[in-house]
Length: 470
Image (tube, rainbow, N blue to C red; front, side):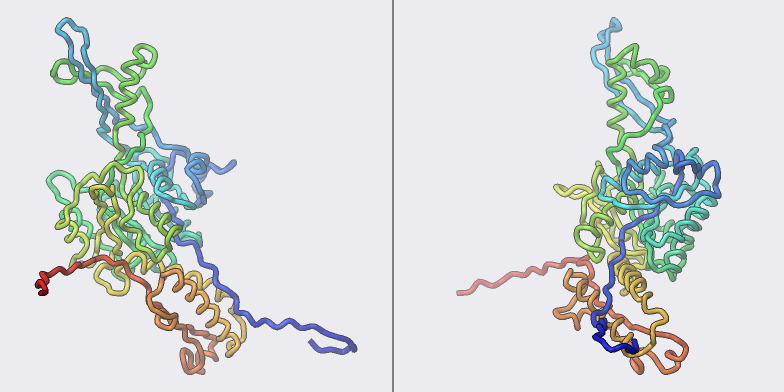
């Protein structure tokens, strides 16, 4: 400022570099079918052009905007009775089964997510839940989610109801979006083996899917499905009753409707059987909840593994140590993370590899997600320097800003090394990262290197005999 009038003038000189704010790391986007989709006067199902992702922070908010689950139509309660020969019932037991679970499981997936520590997430409806799953219905929500900058995780809880080709198509689109934006990660489920197939057969089929090789580092796959304690939604009129007496074959005995008023004891027995029926869910919603919990309690650099899944009874398939060896390491590089049960520990996530499992750079989920966080945080913070003079003053501010941020990450335990110099480097400047031509063309280039901590996946204890000493 040029002084023209006699007096005292104060000028404040900025000496401190700006700081980098760490972006959120566990904000998933759930894409699937919902019972309804109403926000105020807007009905997304009635007017698809209005469809947009909605941010929620609790199951209650989900119910407010998207309703609950559609009633199951395949529930059957079997009453097994013994009599004294004269028709008087001595004992009666009830068991329940779901002969045809609905493909629409979004509500249950959100339940599982929040029970496992989930926080903020986005819901992008693919349409009204009516039992059908169409791959073309996912194109719009996936395109809308691309516009949401806060999203860091993508998941499709109902995608396993698609054909293998359609499943590969939607996962390819998700991985391509991750690679294009470089700020998000896709979590997948492995199709459960059926018939005489084994878990290895299911893994081989998954590895045979045509997925984009360049973007495999942005995805991870988990197996098997899990039995949970959640209750199915049902309508009394659609729950079929089967009755068996004294070992005879069970015969149909109408529906559950009417028992509440006519026979309260049998009605209570039926309800108890339905409550005890385990709900089978794909692992991805529960895993995402643990991603969120681990990020909040430890940090995104900590592997979301060796943590117990909440509200889980057991995995639907018991995976042995030898079977997991085939899942964890494969010549294709498409590693698959196992959900396993251990005595005294519960059901644990027992793997933390990306689909790029043979890469020494991007093998581990926490490494990929930590880089996503640092890249996105640094990108947002350096936007303030766009159109600033491309000179040493700006370079020093940018370098100091990024170094200060990485020092905090090193102190938190995210980076290896006894000193910051061993943990990371930040280079910027003429003759170092830029040429004179770069400056003439308006490019400010910063090189950042980080020694990110990696999970101790294999702990090897070596024992030997020691000769006794005299």
